[in-house]
Every structure is written in C-alpha cells, then in structure tokens.
Length: 108
Image (spheres, rainbow, N blue to C red):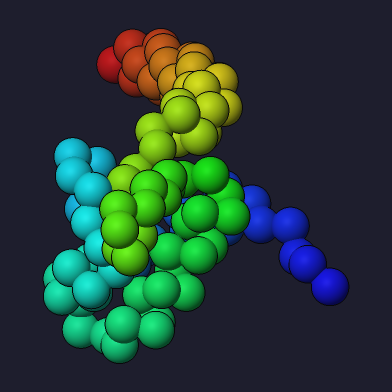
C-alpha cells in the first residue's frame, strides 16, 4: 500500500531540510549528498526518496547517475500557506501589545 506523503512531513525532519538547502544551488548524485552527513548512503537515499515523493527535489539522469536538485515550487506553496498564519498572529500580537500598553498607561 502506497502512503501519500505530505510536504509538511518532509520538511519536519531537520536532515531533509538540510538536504533541501544543500541541493538549492546545485545538482548532486546521492553519494555527494551523503558525504555531507554522518549517516549511510541508504539512509540518505530514503530521505531523497521522501523528498522526491513530495515534489521537493527533481531527479535528472546523466548517464548512470541520478542527479538531485531542490525544486522550490512546493516550498513556495508552503510559504504562501504559512504567510496567512503569520499575518493572523502578527495582528493578534499587535492587538495584545496595544492592549498591554493601554493598561500600562492607565496604571501610571
């Protein structure tokens, strides 16, 4: 049974976030990605597979090598989704700050 992966599950893992950062400006084969981490190549391959399933990396074949590169389009969707909540909480915190300032002024 195939489990649908979620972008948020993928970026929740710090190693996968590091891999995304590493691949942001370059295409690398799995062995070069793995050389940046203290884990086995199969473990890095599992992380890359999850990132691929979520659309966070693209794979290009060059001869026998598979080169991985970050695909920022899915991250843009995440940024847009979180921006709504950032605005919401900024408004709430601004209102709280104003209420606390008003209370301080009344107590002086």
